[in-house]
Length: 113
Length: 114
Image 1 (tube, rainbow over the protein chains, first blue to last red):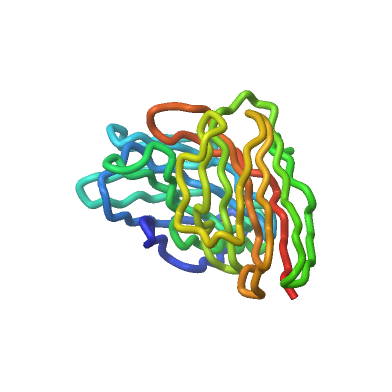
Image 2 (image 1 turned 90 degrees about the horizontal axis):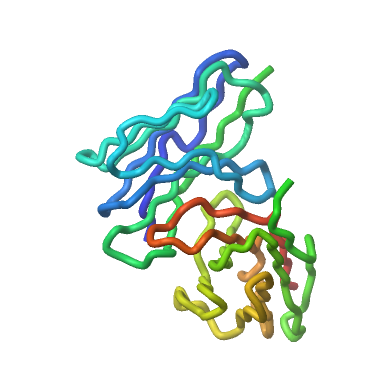
């Protein structure tokens, strides 16, 4: 069963605009991660936020986590055409296996030049 | 560039064939994973090895047989597959730690079953 659910499923913006993607999950977690996947390629880790953190930054990325609402958001600022990709949130389950990371359905981001 | 190497990149096989997917990492990670990803879907966990021992099997059919010969290598043996098994198979590795941390993914092996 899906743990994380992203919305929107697809997002199309112009270069230079900001992109916001949201993720909701169901169980208690130790951490939440965001990954990026270019079409047909492997996934690349972007950022990890722990359950006791509320916000984290990495370059043009800003991630927030609200454990009371079981939700997270990923903000990409000043987007570039090269940011076009699918973005997935991934969560563990603090009551489950140490190694089980479950991915959400993903958001397909298209950045138009 | 990924530090997890998967071969082959593409594989076409018939339903009666036996083939293997291979994965290698040299980051000293002691946890290795197989994920299956269908088009426009998220990756789904299949198997996890921790210290060369099978730690998780997500009720995967026996026509998929994982093997971890040593801490750097992970294989997925395929036999009598069905067309619906066609997918991108992703290998990943991570450091062994109490809570799941960052996964490092390979570029995947795209499998087509005829």
